[in-house]
Length: 425
Image (cartoon, rainbow, N blue to C red):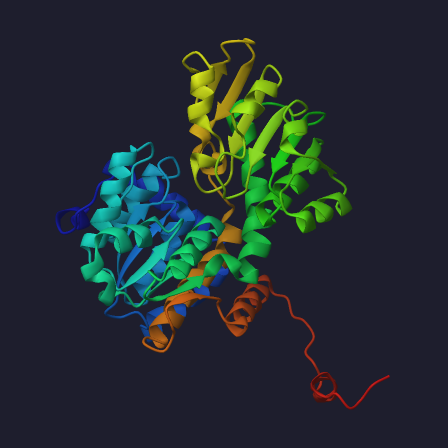
């Protein structure tokens, strides 16, 4: 516990550290790609001398990412990216066992969260790992004098990338940002398989309901929405999809789901899951149309997807009926609307988030993105960049290697054919 005497931190209870360490080590078993990267980082020290601020869900998987960055030589500080996603035992172990300054408490207030963001900036980071772009946004709004210290940032979520592109469009993003979420080894696996499974896990843990035979409305059919719809159907639910993008709507139809406007789905759904990255996609008029006992939850980044303020105006004060389950009774119809996890990420509020095996790929992307930015310091233009395809492919290759699998390679003749325009049918 000597780390507690030399670093500052704000966690719930350091006595939880032994349990946190056991769970961090358990998750590591399912993260072979990140382990391979950590071994290389330890030998090469590509992050030596770098001060890094990470804003992420403080989970067992994130702990293994931080350990990898630490092995590479980075000096890191970690804060929570969501008030309900912190695993307090993991936060305690990172402080006590790995000497990482952590500022994260499950259930922390918005004021505490904002204070932690500013504490991370007080560290004067050269690199930022963000999840929703709150750290970058606060830096730009409040810490102009620190902008010149930043080498770059990486962003984990769709929501954060939308914000970064808005910053870029406004001309205020003065350093390069890697859109980690857009890497194929991130969104194809983390968003689809991770969000799909962990969202259903969160709903079931919070409510203990049977999904089979229920109508579950997926609001948004991006990669996360596809995953939720796929897993809900596998559990026997009748899945309805709402969308604003015609291409995604057609895709949902072709995938075998009913597609309709939210105004129609509101009266049909037993369970609603928002995964859009936008605000108020479940709004006042939708609450008024919902069945008695309808369950509403969110698996997008911020709690703004559900208009909880409007729901409070329509209802008597909410009653907590189970952990992470609040019941609102509408004033006029007396219908009851059930909100899970205070409208925050249900997969992390009521469950443990994504399985470690998919976060292995996502956090491999994060680690290699940080290395990429450092190696190209001063070479990349300000703005949002994609992780190069060869790095994405490297991560997939490491995953196959960890699984003991091999695949075919192109022959010289095949490579020549693919690069030539002269040979046809």
